[in-house]
Length: 493
Image 1 (cartoon, rainbow, N blue to C red):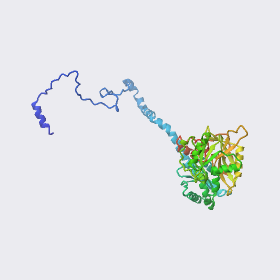
Image 2 (image 1 turned 60 degrees about the vertical axis):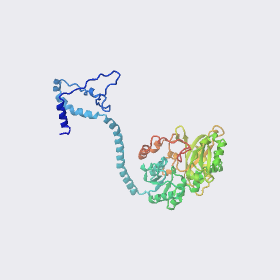
Image 3 (image 1 turned 135 degrees about the vertical axis):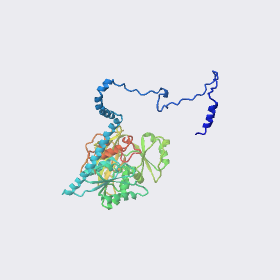
């Protein structure tokens, strides 16, 4: 029994009647007395008050006679109605939209895995049975994240070579998804403090894979480091399609490009060599920044190693340079001529230009347009003939030319070189497939804007196309503008 029960019984015996207090008359100006509020449903659960809640409406029932008559048909059709209610559920709409894509992707993946193994076995047997088959040679390609490297690998694969590719760590491994690539590696980024570490990494790959040819693309690394690795690779019998370190400096250094052009009697742009911040300040005070578009590039051996370019602002107050400018680290300011921009992909063999692919930079569509240009071919032949290499040069080089605008309707056209880069450039995409993949002839893409999707997709090698576009955001899928500032090497300026 509760402890309060005796006291409650005593009070009940004393007061048989409940006496209510008299009602006090309230003045009209006094506030109403406090009253207890009734609990109601929260708006989270219902918008109808508790005292007004009504039951959900139900459809009116059929007459009793009609229900008796239709009882058996309704009983037979009840499973059909239940199936229709499940099929018409709103969740199925999203499933029906996503399911075909999943099935297509899964079917392609399963089909490729089922076909890849028999095809590989068939190729091995065909090479073993064939009487005139030669030993398959292994080719090493750098720049495994670039489109031109993928095209180069496919050409070598079609010619019957075994392709091994690598890329600097931190970059997207595009060639890893290609059926033309037999093995893919990742190497550390070249370090100026220890440049031979990069050479040792390449030598290790070449020895492990028995590489016979090395073709550097130089899309993410300067050719200077590949030139340093060339003697180490040639010792083990690997032929390198890259000039020597001295010749790479001549081609990648903007000051050497201007010197050789003048020696060959070719036109050069207006330039200023700056070795201190005072030289830059004097250049701004002269008013030269107001007379056109300029860019500043690293010069000398360090320039060939770093390959840096920045656009010069028109106002001196906007010039905030993050790099050192000194006599040991000079820079060159170049005025960019106005006119049609041209970029080439030139193949050198024994210091001779054996192939030259030319593309016009289309600024409006932000792409490259392949074309035949006899004047550009003559300029390349004349420039290469004036080179005095330490060894016969074999490899690829890209020239950036401008056909000046002010004399196009006058005395004639004049080509001016504003840059050069050692390595395979984007115009290589115009080359077709022949037995010599790196020195092929121009394909059938003349006067058409190069489309990266067309270059990426091949019916026998579709995975790089899917990987390239699925791994990038919509902003990254846009092609970079042809600017001379902060663009990857070998892109149109």
